[in-house]
Image 1 (cartoon, chains in turn green, orange):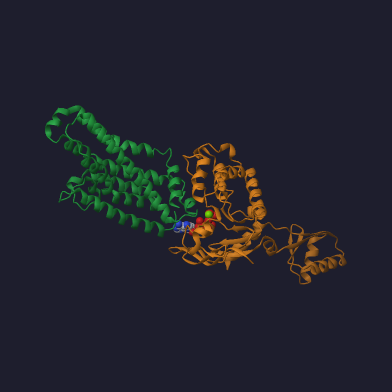
Image 2 (cartoon, rainbow over the protein chains, first blue to last red; image 1 turned 45 degrees about the vertical axis):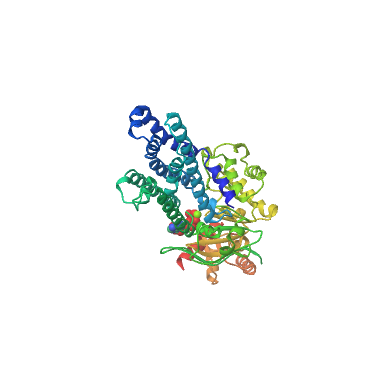
Length: 236
Length: 303
Ligand SMILES: Nc1ncnc2c1ncn2[C@@H]1O[C@H](COP(=O)(O)OP(=O)(O)OP(=O)(O)O)[C@@H](O)[C@H]1O
Ligand SMILES: [Mg+2]
């Protein structure tokens, strides 16, 4: 059943600008550094002997914001597909379980974000090489900075999806999304327990993997809670 | 009798409001069941429960003699539906819309062309639904409901937004479904004239309660027919009848006799003739179903 639902979902996101956003996100993040390094390459090279590491840090300064913003916009686009003409009732009157419908939405969003992450990795690598940073390419760090934020942001994804799927008034998920983006933007100054801070990969032990595990665990929990609530409710 | 749909004491409350209460719906196989009621009577709420879109507050639903709660997916595989205003994906074409649903119900691709043909949308198949007229969207919704060759078709106000020729077309289509495809059809409406022309069985609901459920003939019988007499000197004739202790009305020179058996009518006419009145016409008053419906709902409200 999931296979059928997923292929239907991918059909429905055509012409919605969803693919465009998926590609635009990572391009945007790397483009910021293109400007940064374009304007003051020599200065930035002088800042740190580990030029690759410094470059990756710079890239990462925009990734959390991009991913949270991306989640908010993508979930809003995704749910608008069903909300626009209340197609939920048509979809759910088909022989599909509500759980699998919810799972298919979550899966499509996760896949899109993963594709963004892969693209981020490729663009980061390509621009890094073109900068001639010297030394070995730190594939380790490249992978971390490309994929860790995705896992750390899963709780935000689960929360936004739930809000978008159950709210009759779409102002609710949009408000929640805007607050989330602001919290991520101001993440450095905020306490560690806020899920919107997690994509920054900061914690008092300086172990980014903690954010990944916490993100995946909490994300799974929030996903399950959201799905149970969605299943329990009457269809809009 | 084999019932395709059977509800037992079905109720749905929204807080204090009892949208549906104690509904016992019985739809025999092969019937076109007209589900009739004024706005806010609970038709859509009932239909949503039949499709598992809403959980009943209490009561039981059996479709194809299976419990909906336990067999929802297996039941829905054999059901087609259109609930309230049609749902669609405006950024996709008509064909893409149907394809998105077809992938899930898993019928062959050619079925898309077939259903588009049935609702006469073939020419608009590759156009985006965004630009469709209301009637075209409605047709697309009906096409979608037919996609899986359902054994039970549930249509909530399917002729909404259609022009007269569209209404006739859809009506003919619906009428042909039981005989041609062996379908059972549940069709809701707040317009009696519409149900009158399609349905073979009728259920009338008002304020969430079923106040009548039987064949359409039985419904017509339910109408208390009166016999109208056109006679000479109607005023005098009417007094004579009243003098004999008969219930009779006089309206515009026409005498009306409520609920009379054939013998009684014959007796009355013989009496009038014997008294020297000329009887010009004896006819049955044909009351529209609209009147019957209004009368029924009014009685319900009074009682
Ligand atoms: N989700 C809901 N929440 C609260 N009340 C509801 C909800 N859905 C329906 N109702 C109420 O239930 C009652 C029955 O509504 P329903 O839509 O079933 O009527 P209907 O017979 O389909 O009317 P119409 O002919 O206008 O379509 C109405 O009073 C409505 O306000
Ligand atoms: Mg309705």
